[in-house]
Structures are given as C-alpha cells and as structure tokens.
Length: 312
Length: 240
Image (cartoon, each protein chain N blue to C red):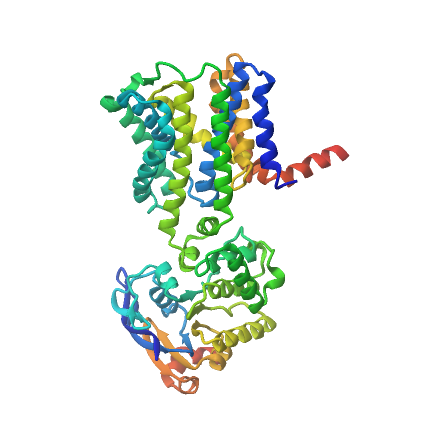
C-alpha cells in the first residue's frame, strides 16, 4: 500500500483536469505541483545534504531565462528551454558550487543569498541579453487551456520524485546524509565532501532550473524581479520544505499545497492581504518551534496531539 | 615492515608548537600505543597522520608513499581509518545506517554494503542495537560505533583515539577483546589511551609524547622503567 501511494497520488492528480475544473483551479494545481518540484529540489540539497540555500531563485531564474533567451534571441520555441536549461543550470551550479561550497553552515547560506541577489541585479542590467526590467514576453502561448501545462509539470514532478527517491536510497543518499550529520566524520570515512556537496548542489539546481524553464512557458512572461525574487522564490522554497517536512519524500508536496493555498487565502483578505509575507514569517516561527521536522516529519506528534484532544 | 613512518613531523599553531620533530614507525600487524599527559599533542599527531592537518615540517608515509598534504578522504581510501576522541556519530541516522554509509567506500551496491555493515556490527557487538538512532546510544556503545564505522571502510591501518575513555569495566573488557580481534585480522593499530593497564597489556610498542616531543619509545616494559616517562606521566598516575 505504502509503496503504491506515489502512483496512486499521480493517478488521482492525472484525472483531476478531467473533472472540468475552472481555469483558476487549474492554475492553483499547476502552482502546487511546480512548487513541489522546487521543494523536492531544495530538499535534496538542504534536507538531505544539509547545505541550506537561500538562493534557489538563482537556479529557478537561470532555468527561466534559458527558455526566455532561446525564444527571444534564437527565435526557437521556449520549450527547448526545458532540455537546455539542464545544461545551463548545471554549468552555473558548478561555478557557484566552486565558490560557495568551500563555505560551511551559515556562511554557505549567506553565499547563496548573495548569489541570488547578484543574479537579479545582473539580469536587470544586462539588457542586451535579458531585456532588463522590460522582461521577456512570449508572443503566443502554446495552449490557451491549462490542461497540457498541468500534465507537463506533473510529468516533471513524477520524474523528479522517482529520481530523488533513487538517489536518497543509494550510496549518494547515504553520503549526503553523512555530510549533513558531521562533515569531519564523513571526510574521515573516505567521503570526498567537496565533491559530493557539488553533486547535491548540481542535481538540486538542475531540477529547480527545470521548474524555472516550465514557468517561462506557462506564464509567458518573466522579468528579473519575478524569477530572481528573494522572498517570493528563495524564501518560499525554504518554507515549502520546512512546513512540509525536511528530508522526507512527501514533505515538499504537502508544503507546496499549504503554501500555495495559504498565499491565495491570505491575499484575498481585504487590507491584510498585502501583508502575506508577515503571515508567512509568523507561520515559519510557529513551525520551527512546534514542528521542527515539518508536518510530514512530525506526523506522529501531530497524531498524538489530535488523539489527546479527541479523548479529552 | 613499517606501515606508517612519521618523519620529523612538527606542527605549529601560530607560535605554539603542538608537535616538535616527532619521528617513529608503526610496524605492520602490531599495536602501537601513543601515550602522554593531556595536551601532549597525541590527537594533533593523529590529525596530521590522518590528513586533517598538514605537518608544518616533516612528512608522514603510509606504505612508503608520502601522504602528508592529502585530504582525509584520500587517505581513508588508501586504507587508513580513524575514530574520534569526541565521538562523532551521524546522529540522526540509525546505527546500521552509520555503518552502511562507511561501508559504501569499498562496495558499490546497497545489498553488499548492508551485508558488510551487518558483519561489522556483529564483530563489534552492536548488532542488537542496529536500529537505534545513534543519538540515543550510551557513550560506551557510541565509542564502539566509532570503531565499527572505521572498520567498515575495510582499513589496513586503524587509528583509535581514546576508545576506552569513560567505559565501565565490563565494556572495557569487551573493547579490549575487539581490539585484539582486529589485530588478529592483520590490521595494524595505532591507539591513544590514558588507561595504563589497557595500553600496557595490548601494545606491542609504545611512544610517549610530552609537550609535543617524543620523550621515549620502546616495549611496555622498557617504558614502565624509563625514568623520564615515570617523571612526566606515570609518576603522577601512581601518586594519585
């Protein structure tokens, strides 16, 4: 039963569009699946390998701009961005890894934070390549209907889920967790920590970049402030994983559902809606104090909590 | 035949000489005990041999190859494993997963790694505790987990940093048996230990450090009767 649950969930998600959901609900579904892809990617690096990144918007943006620039400069379909973003983000991640992965703990986090900001400013100013703040607009979208976009991101999510599960259960996964738990111990067990951290960063970046390339195709418009956003991308990525459950398979998916719905709900509250980041901040504090392993990670704790309430 | 040759090794931290011109060999298949008062430079020497520090002067050879300057993971791959005085278990992993992670150094797939981990856990008497999250292990078992993890990398040479400290008498006997069995497998051992009875009974050869310098070297009997050693170290123990 437990083994079949990923397939079951994929099947349920796959039939959802057939129910004739409104365009708005399809949009929400697409966002949930897209955020779970980004969350899974971050989780591989931050959750399993213990390298907390505050700059995943950089990889998302590089993926998004790969699509955008291919379309804008080479006049080919922005869909080529999906395969080609793999190369672009991988190369970019190797460079970033070379610089940032010699830093440990909080210094690595700060390094990635800086990297995200550097990329946003660069994208704003390299107008010859990125069109700067004007952004890149796709003249025509591939489909007016959202159904096919949903199936594409669902396919990407399933592939990412399977790939990450395979990685985590292999030698790579053990090495990542060993590095997270104690870098010196890992090093003395014959683990080349620099190399394996670079591998984790690159895999994580590539998956995030794929989501970025998808975003360009789906939304049809990108600019630096959107795709390289610190609070709307980098921080939300961390929240998705923290809320859902760090270093769990299902955490990013659960976190994505909660974060996307929460964002939509809070935004629709009159007057207070603009302050949704404040609510996110409060939520993060509550989660860190009471559910440090996230909803999936602290499920036994949650069950106990509700069990007690029921009997009382 | 010397497995490890420490040749004129000095290590400075700023103006402090943690090690000064230390030279000795470790013979294949033997147990070398490294003793000395607190702060004598024993752990620093381990860190130099295992690659965490590069020596400021001198060199370390492993099977004839110079290894000083290499990273710990490279040295481990060449066949040298170590344990830590302050134990470093991979806390949120089970005992079994800790050992599997290190078993992956020499085997490629998970089944083999698991098999090797089971064997190692049986050998070190931790098999019953395999599913315990290592954060929850008592100190004695954590020390043994360190040994198990080092053994799972299938080393030729093992560095043990105070693997007996803080053990109760029963655990002590068990650990001594484990060390003897490791030696019986043909693995060369270098061990730091404060427990004099243990070190005198298991070591083939002893090196004494004091203030970063080698003050004596010889068989346990020679060390016991060396006036310099008695003054620097054993005298204090006997007087206490």
